[in-house]
Length: 261
Image 1: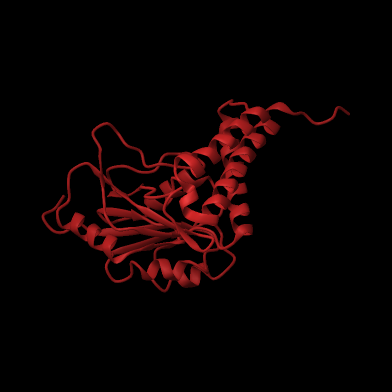
Image 2: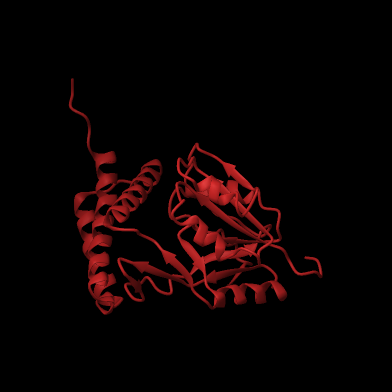
């Protein structure tokens, strides 16, 4: 690492994010050195908006899964550090300052976790196990990268890597409406079931029910989702439903057969 202040890139993987992308990029415009956007084949104005902020816009329409797509995006990054964002996220001023402090005094072999505060159905969710919802998003580009998981991908952490928490929220405007939630959760469930099927895993309807009930109780009771009002109750119910669906999907894939001719 040179004695000069490290450079910083923001990286995003996107598809049809015209409604979100400008606000996201505005929150980092002017203080990062590089913006890399890898598109998965948008059909809206995502590319037009992205090119207002960067000329490093790339397309990989052959969707390989979240982990592989992030690894491909990182291969285009030239800066010393990488900050990962999703298009529906915004960097707050406090978080920006904490990131700048890191770059002013970088530590060796360190990944930084960021607290994420989600706005869901008209309310910031501060319970349900959703806050502070720390995500590892800032690290030296040459230190590590995301794993190959198709969904729920994570930054790879070797034993010598330390994780340091940052202050300042990353605002997350995760769902536009109920339909948007159901579409996104169905996509995650499908990817989860595909990944488990490839690993030879099996499931049952009973497993799905037990995990769904456990999910609701954990979110609404143990993690005080009731303090988030009606939104907390709705989110706990929907999360339990999503949990059941992914196990049901795996059961259908691994335990049912088409009718014999």
